[in-house]
Length: 212
Length: 212
Image (cartoon, rainbow over all chains, first blue to last red; front, side, top):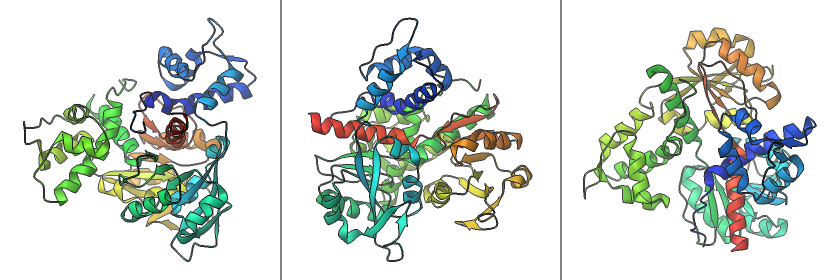
């Protein structure tokens, strides 16, 4: 069951950008938004936008487009962003500081409740209001705080070891920012975040300027 | 020309992970690696791996797989990662600190040569050996340092303004970590990095555990 492929991955990954544009239109006082408007904003074809939004269950109205409020609700419900999720962050370095200070996560229900590290110089401090605790306290704190997500931002060489500590604590979802593919029990889901893949895209695009 | 769609985007985005696995096999002393080995490591089907590697121009040998050295060269040449690229980073905050300290970029030819900010408390300091300069010096320094990439990590509300300063300096490639779609001249390429899209994927995967 957990090995089932999320078939609509590229569509799901585009939904946050759609949501951002739709919310801006809402702030501008619009009541409807068309797939064409969203598509133009992102240099996509409108049929792609309609298809992507369709996975959330919403259907647009001919000529008028999508009613904004139900559209926002439909996307947020589909992404499970309408309920608060408590997350811990393992590795209290610069990336942890960047992520805990990123307002978009909080706006989408992701609340960082604690960070963990082994560095005694960091333990006892706060990053953007999130307390940094000793990794030894992880299991105890996860139960106490009801955290369901762990964001893994430790150095690669300790990634697997930390993943083991996380899964032992009962957490079933890991967002992995290390460059190691961690081994996990079958009932734990993970999302691998590869910062070099965006750089790969940019490099190929740059190359296309020079060679065309 | 610049509006041409990079059709193989998902394949290109997977190449860095393949490269990582192939280089590990090389360190372990292997001379050949099969698409199946890479596929198993990443929970992909081997035909997908073969197709993705094919875009770099390499062809594997039946039974033996791909010769490791030519395979690495083929991927690095395709991604343009075999030549050094100098990058500036605009916005010297936590994300900039995380990115400049990420060893994978340096290993793939991306060299941060300067960071820019408006905060006088940051100007004159270093982040991971990269000098932080005033944004007023940007144009002058880009010419002096021959930088070709700008990584944009400023707050969203000043993203467009900073993008304008960057494009005026002659830089033709922007890696955008803000949540704003910036408007750019037709001869400038950009890559949008959306940290919430990984969170969207993780949320949907979590939901699939609870509902199955």
